[in-house]
Amino acid sequence: MASRLLTRSKALALALSRADAALSLSLSLSLSLSLSLSLSLSLSLSLSLSLSLSLSLSLSLSLSLSLSLSLSLSLSLSLSRCFGSDQCAACLGGGGL
Image (cartoon, rainbow, N blue to C red):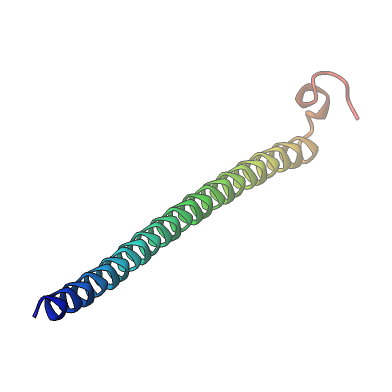
């Protein structure tokens, strides 16, 4: 009877040890998955911020080019009015052509 109890006790202790190891492994895998998801989210956020910055720089460049084109058109119109008039010397600041 005592040897049976001892055998059962040893078997129960072994089963508990295996269950504890399985639970520990499960928790470790869960933590690893959580860290992996956190890293993925962080990289996704970094990519989103990078794309946002790229879009902002592209918009800034587009506005700069638009301003440059507007100034060039304004200068072109001013010069065409000046060269089309009889007052070129006055228009060009007295320098004449």
